[in-house]
Length: 108
Length: 114
Image (cartoon, rainbow over all chains, first blue to last red; front, side):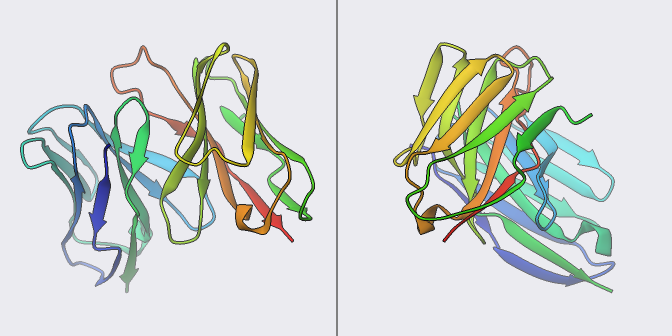
């Protein structure tokens, strides 16, 4: 049974700083997803990683996948306040299994 | 217009009442899902449907039932609501024919059971 764990669960950072969110998963997952959720809102798809070594970038966010280590990372470069949100990773075994989410707070 | 819509958006009900949450989509996707989200937690899968005749239980189906009335409509019912079913409920859809099979989420229904 696939289990997905994220860390940290809460991250407070200053604008302009870099940081990484980690997503570990327990068994084979044929895809790895990253979603963003603003408070009280729905989930927005950010990235889908399909294979080992995959890297996707959008603005200040970059996601990568290492299937051998069963690890995906979401790297934030030069954080800005607009990136404040909760970020979820999810593995796929025919249905999505979500991590607990990482709440990111970017302070001016 | 939104691709995935949910009604109602907010609902307050009393313990023991039967309620139905509805989901409609215009994306033409075969697969539909119901999740619940509790504060500070990720999403848990309640039920999913790969087509109109294929409905499956998720991780936390007890106390819930679903109906797939058409490709575009998937309803979630709470037969006898209880307070610990207070949560944010999301519907989602996906296309199994796409390379990524990304799930697209509706805006959510906030349910309070008194």
